[in-house]
Length: 91
Image (cartoon, rainbow, N blue to C red):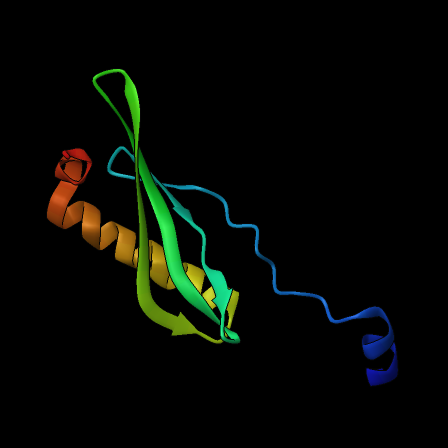
């Protein structure tokens, strides 16, 4: 089996993550590979006054699997929403 994996390449982890709605915000987990691990990153979006606002974030936390990084990204985004709400969109 390893012969075929080496020949055709290994499949990457599933990196398609559906957006999640939380308290009227839309969270998108977007972890990225960095030094062999997946670093926490994502976006939080919301319509404010008829305008779509977006807050991008990256954290230093890293995980060996994409799935674990995506779960933690969603958890971190929910925490940010609970603490800051729409204030994260104020410049």
